[in-house]
Amino acid sequence: MPFTAPKPQPRGFARRVPPAIFPSLLGLLGLGLAWRRAAPDFGLPGGIADLALGMISAVFCFGILAYTAKFMRRPAAVAEDLKILPGRAGLSTMAMGIYLMAAVLAPWLPGLSPAILFLGLAVHLVLIALMLGDLVEAPAEQRRVTPVMHLSYVGPIVGAQMALALGYSALAAAIFWITLPVALLIWYRSARQALRERVPAPLRPLLAIHLSPAALMGTVSLGLGYQTLALAFAVLAALILTALVLGARWLLAAGFSPFWGALTFPLAATATLWLALGGALGSGAWRGAGDGALIAATLIIPPIAVRVLQLWAKGTLAIKTNAATA
Image (tube, rainbow, N blue to C red; front, top):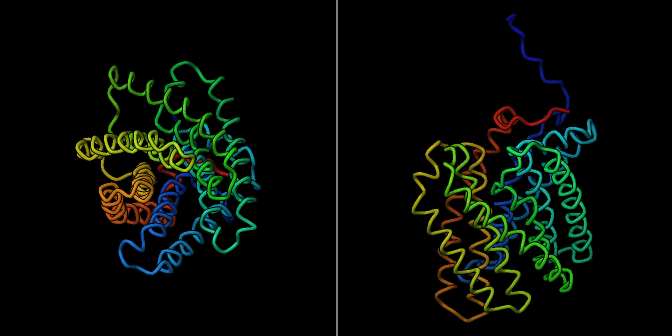
């Protein structure tokens, strides 16, 4: 067979922006918002968290701008990215990041935050429609349940958090009750698969995503006044996190990869839930657990995000994650 040289990547801004940048950026945004909540516990001025959020938001907005430029060059690139696991995870977390931007800007631009929230919902709903279309048309072996489905189909629960903060309680409740059975179904199907199949080492970091719905559902439950349900989700998050910590060597056996970005946001979301529960119940135990989880997240999330962004800057992240080219 004759050798065929690889096609050179077309020149121009944002020709091959990898969606894999967004999970780590989402983790950084979640971490910054958790520190905004917890700064008084550590005797820190709130301005430090806001300064960090400003820098993180600038990087996130640049990522959005770059991916939008890629979309404008060739809209079909989005559909191609959604056909692969890193692309689905990345674009879903991009939409979730838009929700968090509404929270970041709420103290400074309260009039703009609702528009950002609804923009995030619109983007996420379009992505869900595209992914469901691909799922229906895919062969049976490609319709397996994966942890990334939490990001794709349960991810709007992040929007419910923002809706509560902005006073849209009915919208938050609707999102909660729609996404809750979806999360339960994904957990159930994933557990059944885990009993029958071995998870390949490179994909194991994605298992950390199972922690996110527990933490997010718990935070929204608390905001809706379902304290018993919130406590149940907090315990579930503790059990999942304990299993991940005890299995860390197995989980990370393949070494660093862009999939490590899946470890970031779940940690920040769990710290946020425990901090919120500690404040609502006046529980020093949950507050202390939240502070401890926040410290751990601070030690883990930034190094992972920096390594992923370095791969993007070097041009290798797109290759490693097979990102589409515009």
